[in-house]
Image 1: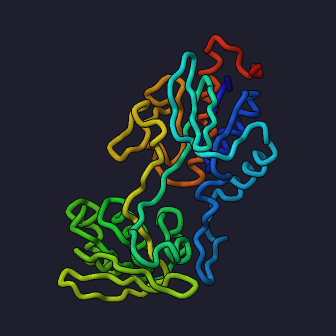
Image 2: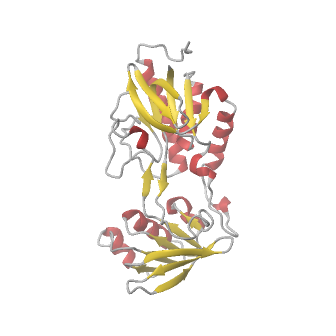
Image 3: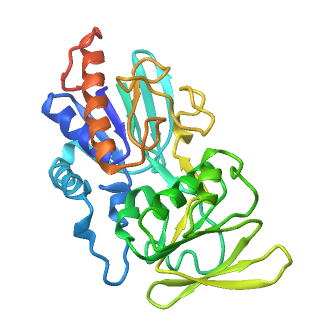
Length: 309
């Protein structure tokens, strides 16, 4: 039985793994890759990435360290987690089973897709799913935001402060009557297109045009430097549903020490209800969660760091 199994190898999971190894825990990281969403960086022509402070370099250092720890990682996908005496059993897609006294979930969240022609062709090539991460790159540029929820309105408001023009494409009225909606109506550089749906994404090497359908059924083309899809984030929590408490958005609820509602299960990063979706925040949360798991294990009867037979 392991001391700790970490599920997910993004910024939070990688950081947690390194901290657990340094604490001499018998730890296993189960992940489909090393780096998570940081492996998919937004690409645009003439884009100055160095203008933005980000945590990708830190993540790469952790990934390089974990890459050499073959005994502490396994490339697979966790399907479910079930309680067993003294801990939990993890079941993977490849059919493996592992047990541990504690679990740390760091599986992140994925952006909800539009599911229209051309979307998959231009993902992260002019088509972005995180304005909070990339908005600072678009000073004086033309951008489009797709969505009608609070996430989309916040993205439009962030971009409106720096972009030359922001077009908000809303499939419905959404949250326009809230404080953010009222504020957006006051921006001279924001155009709000209510009841408009997206039909297609077009471009060359990068996304250049969004084909939208108006309420009357006619189509129009929107040209911009980038398109931000802000339909919502889908947390990857399927493996622990029924085990831990989730909030209204399906994210794992954690306290200030990254503890979930289930004893011995911790969580960190975008899969949780912690604000906000940022690499640097996930790194810190991963470190904190690993240290909290270590403190929990110190109080358990079994010896921390003991090598299983």
